[in-house]
Image (cartoon, rainbow, N blue to C red):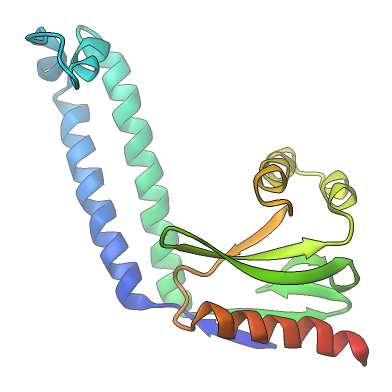
Length: 185
């Protein structure tokens, strides 16, 4: 079993950002009538937003409600991670398990690698047969997500390490030891 501690400072900063976005879009939601009643002055570079929502308060409310819901979900998930403190990975009964959730069979894993996109860091879990893994998934939304990730990343499983305290290379080494060393036993 291995565990990784969350970077609480980074998570608190993202929580603060989420609160600001929630407040801003809640204000827009509440004042949708006033914000959509004024006709946009001209056709300039950014006036498309004004023209899009002009005399459409329900559209603005829907958009703002969606953004508030999205950032509220993100905020709650960050709180849950802060309360949890650590994330645990283990090799149990031939499966790679995160917490109590089975991720993948150890025998299906080919290798791991780190991918950095701007400031986001992922560990990609390459599988021997990605199509078989996706086909075995029964949840439609997870299956759709696996298809999209497989299309973009050439593997259906990626693990975000943005909120972990440890460096991505250290996390990668620990995962490799957990999966490949225990497979040799």
